[in-house]
Image 1 (cartoon, rainbow, N blue to C red):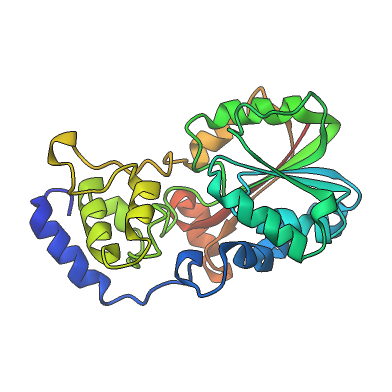
Image 2: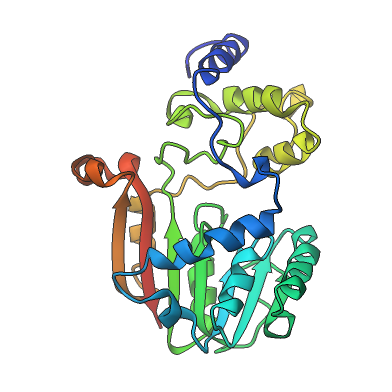
Amino acid sequence: MRGWPVKLSVRLLLGLNRLFPRREHPFNLPGSYAEWQFEKARHTLEVFGDFASPEGIVAGKRLLDAGCGAGGKTVYFACAGAGRAVGVDLVERYLADARDFARRKGVADRTEFAAADVTRLPFPDRSFDVAVASDLMEHLAQPEAFLHEAARVLVPGGRLYVSFPPYGHPFGAHLSDAIGVPWVHLFCSEDTLGLTYAQLVKDLPDGEERLRLRFGTVPGHHPRAGPVRITYINHMSIRRFRGMLRGTLRVVHYRQLPLRPYLGLLAALAPEYFTHLVVCVLEK
């Protein structure tokens, strides 16, 4: 739909989207974002199972949860045995919920939350034994700077556990809370995606908040501001990520998990489009 007039392409995408069920997404669930993260956190660690057990990753460690969101994963890491778990996120409003969630789970004394840019962490050198960056690399404007900053705050021998979906993933545009069409970002312009997304969330209580998070503005409200751009992601590809690994921390484990086990051949032939997660462990 990239060559179609925007208004027509929006109508076509709205019609196509009706054919696809709404996916599970924390924005659409009745529970809190923190609770959803807490429930998913063990899986965040289990994807590294070929290298280390979830308990082995966190037990007794000073742990940094980079891009912690509402802190559910940070709290899980503390509950799973981390000596201290520190969550960092740019969205300051998440952190009050995170602290409250830590109190309710009984780990407030072993958790800490800070509003900060992960490329400029407010911690001294060698502050952490382990850092976890789950679903973070695809969002950073300067992902290379984060790798260097992680190296700074890790102790010698400390490890950074990274996992993320590449941009070519069926829902790599991170719009699946409203748009359920797989690979939609590969055949629609960002203008079309933004205006379609705006139509789909306009009647939701948090609709404008979702738009500002995804696009930095409200598509359609500022016609002179130029084309809509998705500002929430950086189009992180597998190729780009692998190139970033040269000259930073030492790679001690690397895997590309297919979308489904039976799609392993397609994931090998076209990894950018059929990889569910890139999984990597880096060591200082």
